[in-house]
Amino acid sequence: MKQKLRGDFLLILVLLAAAAVLYFVFRPGEGGAWAVVTVDGEETARYPLGEDLTVTIGGTDYNVLQISGRAAAVIDANCGDHTCIRTGTVRRDGEAIVCLPHRLVIRIEGGEAGIDGIAG
Ligand SMILES: [Zn+2]
Image (cartoon, rainbow, N blue to C red; front, side, top):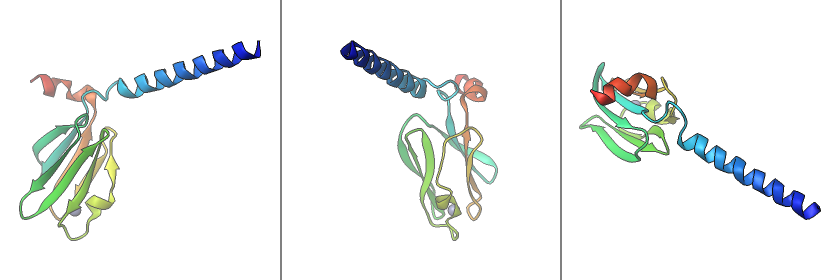
């Protein structure tokens, strides 16, 4: 009897873990999440949060954007204050990294509103 109870408990744990994994993989609204880059108020690029990448934005004035684990962060920049680097990672709809000296904004756009943009 004790043995069987333990088996049931383990099975429930495994099922819960599987459900949690499925929840995080297929979380609604995150499928079409983007990191949208705007410079001087103009959108210059957008990168899907689902694909890990590191990209340098700009030339003389640069910010290095890293997307990793469905989150975006500025990991290097030559701006004076480095506020953009200290912001850390952003991952939720509407969160943003701002680099005032470079007039750069990296904003997270969630899935629902971005579906038309992907199709068009
Ligand atoms: Zn900065």
